[in-house]
Image 1 (cartoon, rainbow, N blue to C red):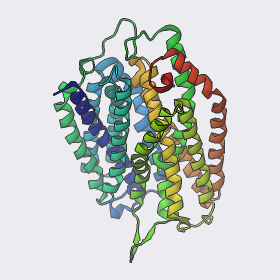
Image 2: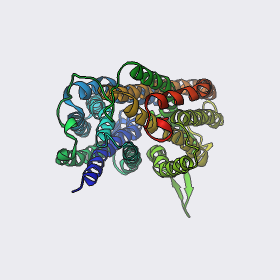
Image 3: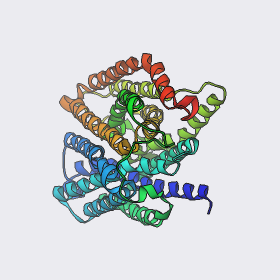
Length: 451
């Protein structure tokens, strides 16, 4: 087998494991709130909608917060490959716990195990993908695109399949897929670069992918750019928290979106299926956006990575503001009123999702370019922590919006959207500086000198 084919196969094996991790997360995100509010006699927990909203926010905080701490395990102790395998094993254990136990204690134990496994696996994955192409920037960027597509295939598949099962089997099925992925990942160990198979090697000067020293002024400038752009990542993270990271829009969809379809007979779209809007849009739109950017680059119009992230931030804020005006139509005090058109709801979800394409994978690629290897998984974990914290905040925004019969729905979502819009506007003047800094200190790193 040629080296190129070995690398491609290795990336495919790693991406397949990430597919099932996302299927796990989105299956749980789509089902847990519905499970929590279902009557005990129907196999649920019998909670209120507000309690279910807070549950989803807490789980999002755990699943995306633990990686900032457990990412250090891959960076400093086990190495990234071992962290991925260990994380997969813990995720499988968590799903099995959810399946075999009942009641709140078993439910929380299973969620904690899945979140801990995610914390080990998620931040190490991008580092593992990057290691297959240490000196080939173009191929590495292409590998990340395929990797991100696989992430969202799993995310799209998770809620759809879970919607066909009872709660217990919905909890189990993604764990079974993760078991298959683990077997393939272990079988693919020989394809993984030697530098990633064992514990990390410490000592000596830190270097980037091409072997250039990553020290002194260059390191400081690169990290400054990453920290500045982190603010734009936070904008998207809040929008994601409202739409997909918690049960905010899921509960809105269940009670206030007209999910009826006229197929010659009246059919309602299952609520849990709407969790697949975001990943489905990403799977469909990513190749189109990638081709458009490549065509622009050939004509000398390549949009810099900071500019792409600003555009993604604008789309994210537009989705929040649009949601505010959509929920304004809900009568105060009504527990169920299908007044929001399905097309409007899907459209707002799609705007947020397209914004994600211009922020999340772009920032992921920038981390592997600008951060030294010893900090890459930690940076990825920091991003996941931000998603967790803002998902937690979004769940509280959603719970507050539902208080007093929903009297504050419009105001809460509008304030969130306008506040993030102001933040994005502050980044626009500094885009040229960030582009120049990346180009100056990282020459030869992709189109536009790495910008």
